[in-house]
Structures are given as C-alpha cells and as structure tokens.
Image (tube, rainbow, N blue to C red):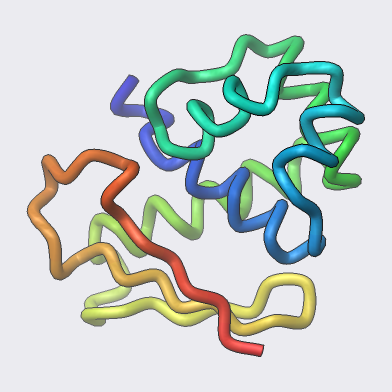
Length: 116
C-alpha cells in the first residue's frame, strides 16, 4: 500500500477542484459514499474498476490523475527540497504540506489546502 499511499489524497484534491461533493461523485461512479470517503482518507485502495469509474465521474484522464499523484508523492518525500510544495492544478494553486509531519503519518491526517 505504500506505493499508492497518496492516491486518496489525490482523488480528494481532484474532487474538490471540480467542485463536486462526495455524494455526487459516488452516485455518478456507482459506489458508496462511505467507500469513497475511505479511499480519500487512505483507509482503503480502490480496485482498478472502481478507480476507473471515479476518474470518469471526475472527468480526469488516467495519465493526468497519475501525474497529480506523482506531484503529491514528490511533495511528500521532499524531492523538491522545499518545506511546502505549491503547484498549479486546473487553474488553482495548491499547497501540499506533508514534509512537516513524520513519514508514518496516516493519510487521513495529511492536509492539502487549495488557495483560490
């Protein structure tokens, strides 16, 4: 699970940027709202079929999504050499603050903030 530890964080970021609620996305993807919540909090990883449904509901391509995940992973591992990573995503600036926490912090305790 460590390879995709930020997958839920990336899903939540895209959903928020799209201005969609968990209820809307889960309904369109035909998965339970509580299941989507578990994915976003990093409690569970979605099966490929569920991830595909979510990406279609969020109107994001597979390559695009995994690139976002890659950026979040780089921020977490401090590969940029900065305390916080700021990047532009769909015309919105996002700051990923992950380096200030221990590497073993559960995904549900990590925070990503969007700055309009």
